Image (cartoon, rainbow, N blue to C red; front, side):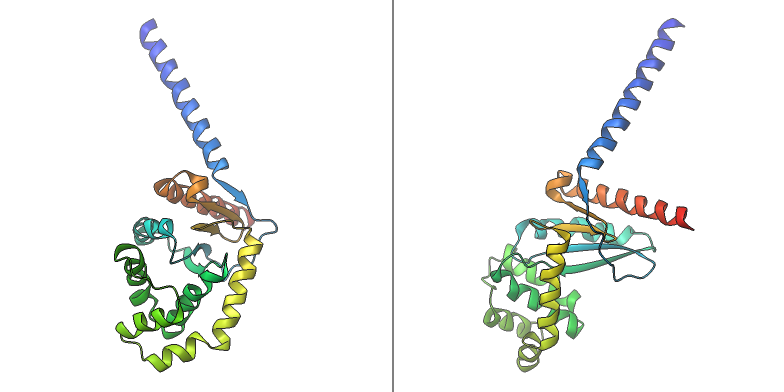
Length: 212
């Protein structure tokens, strides 16, 4: 009887220790965005990915995000925003916004990632991006028009400014509801990042319930 009690006590202590450690790791895996930034998803909890098509870590994260998106809750809205941490990132950001304007992000996003990282194609400027888009059925003139439009230029400036406000230093970075910043580096890996995203979403969900 005493032996049974000992093992139950030991197991309880172990579980408590594990739970406490998990919480500490979660706290270390994100940081607050100060001040919090506005979102674009209304009453839904916004999960925003900042990325760059030239980033291999962003490419490696894609399958994990795709899996997460298939199971995310209805009260969560996912968005992407190309990050701009250097002038050489601008062409890819303009490409994303061009695809967004044309309503073909789903047809362009993964194929562009694949072309650069899987096929090792050198698609890093307007000329090569134009060829890529036309190979995917986009009229060359339409691409040039939108790619160099004032509307896209405005979005480029907004992305640059928001990156500074979020205080990102690399990609991929994830912003949850304009309040929390996390990344694969902070979380410790791709699967861990997904876990932290879910924890931060739950944190926001609990906060919203408490305010009702």
